[in-house]
Length: 111
View 1 (tube, rainbow, N blue to C red):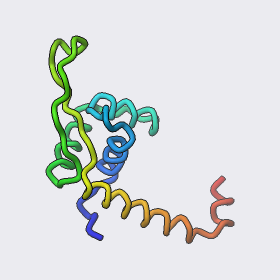
View 2 (view 1 turned 90 degrees about the vertical axis):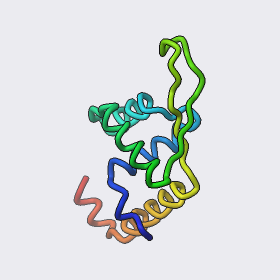
View 3 (view 1 turned 180 degrees about the horizontal axis):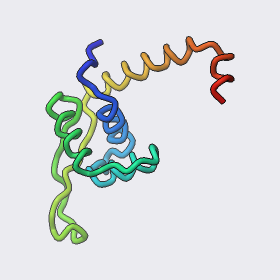
View 4 (view 1 turned 120 degrees about the horizontal axis):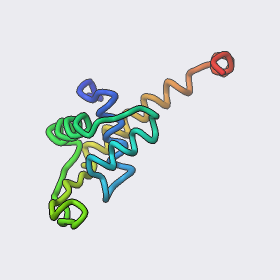
């Protein structure tokens, strides 16, 4: 597994794209991340992460239709590639293996 090039923020952006497809664009991704994390997320940070993820081959993008609400401008819509899906599966597997190894008494101490 080669995921040393996937940071935590990139991981959640990639997950948000997977959740929001086919309507995944920077503004709704930022809103989804804010809803899920309770933290303010700038669209600039999301744009940068989307560009990095697309460069790495984890995402692809295309321009959607022009809309009146955007003054006739088109949205750049993102989707997860097969490689991006494999990376997400690998990340999930690693995290799940760690969670499964935590002794239940330890979790009880956290609550």
